[in-house]
Length: 499
Image (cartoon, rainbow, N blue to C red; front, side):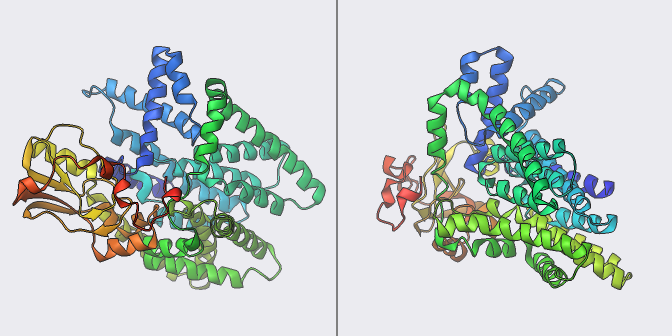
């Protein structure tokens, strides 16, 4: 287990150090943590109020404040004048390692033996879905850590303080990433399934609710004191922004995304889960454990799907699918443990296949080029160039500095969202080219519609530096309408659902 965690930590830290930060707009929230840390250091009360009044994923702001402090401390011990964003990502990536250990502890808490729990941890460590986000400054892993901790406390009977601590961790998970709202009832379901009588359920539920409400109050109080009514207004507005995509595909997106993310290894785990379903109905402790994991897996799938397809409230993204993976690891581990008991000689071969499949999935991530790194490289080697896009409808990102090389254009070095049509690229000689991250199919499930994904697959996006044949035909700055996305009002998008 120690070797598994150490190897997983090395891979994730190396991934974070290879770059990719600030690819998603949501990663900009890391700067709130930096601003909070700077305000605390300076004793700037106005600065604190400014940062605390934002309610979205507010506990992640606190995590980022600690990460920023560690980053600053490391900068003081080196020759760098400021901390590294890659170091911040490396620190946050350790939550992904923590999740591997927590899957192991959840299996043990649920009644699995040590060998079965180790198989669950191996599957979690091998999951591509739980791996490739580690390079980004996002709250998903730390929110999942809090939820898994709450589940560990919920599935084992114990004194009231355990349930109160589970409620506190559940509230923390929700406030780390609000998009994991559906894990709150999932933890409650786990608690109900793990208590034998109605009286015990009421007692456990009351203790859990006390911990949940207490933690929620503590987390919200700084924002309420800083922002008051403005804090509530921001919270209300933020709850209406989970609309990028299509409600109708909410039921199918999880399976489609997991196929592209996990490949044949995921298909094998799904088959193992099918075996677990067949073993879940006889009497006995193993069957009870399997039924519990399957019910929690079903709830983790059905709750967000109901909110998406049934109520058209929240669109499902790839990040929404990630909490399914630990439950697949638990059911898959049961099947692998059964296989090892039936044919002990097959266990080492299964482990080699799982680890080999994982490394096959992981390897391409380390050489992936992201727009930020491509732009930095071009500025260092060539100076500030023009920017161009091969798709229309994209919200153009304005240049930060004056153009110094009007004869060159950097193509697609930004987020490509939303998409209207493919328009090709300016004529010119290609000086270098890399795949855009959106050429990697799992990244296409973070807000793009089926029509947009089809467009990206028909024309895989590339980042290119072009020596322009006709520089005058490529403007240095686009019209304001293109910057704000007004140019494609007639493209068929429901812009009311695309804030």
